[in-house]
Length: 381
Ligand SMILES: [Zn+2]
Image (cartoon, rainbow, N blue to C red; front, side):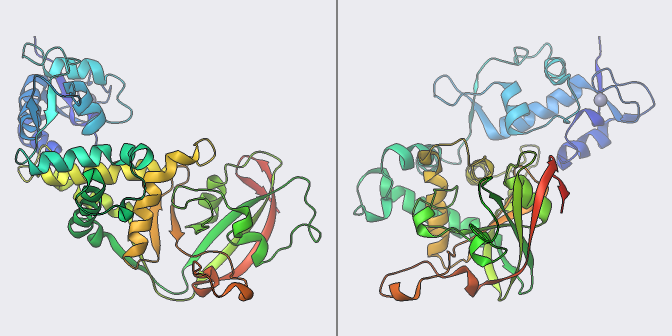
């Protein structure tokens, strides 16, 4: 029996995959048994399964041993993100794609990521995979360790490599006059005029006496976190009904250079297993970029400080290359966030110490308003 699926079953962003369906499929108005749409291009699931297998073989080896073994379903669903979000028959579809082949058991963990050459790349991949663990539990301050000892310096070298091959290309300039927003919840016991005002002190980065670790900053170093628009800034605050909040609008006052992590998907072509241009080395980097993007978007409130160490180190590294900040997709809002490596206003008498530059060097507060949250994210002035 032939199973027919359709183009609408799959993630519309997988270009080379859809190109294949266009070339080998047929157009009709039959109902697709998987995604229940009628207007997709129809294709025999087994023909498509053969094409998918070619892609898997391009990027993965069948392996006997190894800790990171994946099943075909994990590769397609979690790594390639092949299925359309609304398609809830992804398991049945995966089974039918491979019915009668050696991959029929879609949950058998048989595949390992292929690496360009045994040795160097394999070592790189292992270091990236362990980066987070090593930062937390093995050697946090790798810059201080003499060269030639263990993984620590390998990580420095790896950061250099990823900088040269990827990060450098994510450079973006933020023009002067760009509007950015910041929200701050007001303690319910606080009274305006007594405990806070509609001013810079109330809405800028906290001073060092009131410093908490964040995704990009260790405790003791406060950075300037802002969002693209008010809605994103509010969502970042994870506000609840009846809370009062200050929203500050800032305008940048000079040209600022950031690493734009939202552009990290420009490497997706290189890691598209269905494209003949697939590159194993880039896949290793892309895996790191993707995991970093997920990591920085996680909510701050639930994690322990140790959860931030790896992202803080990458931020520190980027700062060391002279960038003003990192731009990244908000995990909760529709817009982006930016962390600038600038802190609270500097107290003039402490000028003998090294201090993070003052955020007022790069941005000017142009408006502060106070709101009460009526229903989640609807505002009442
Ligand atoms: Zn379909």
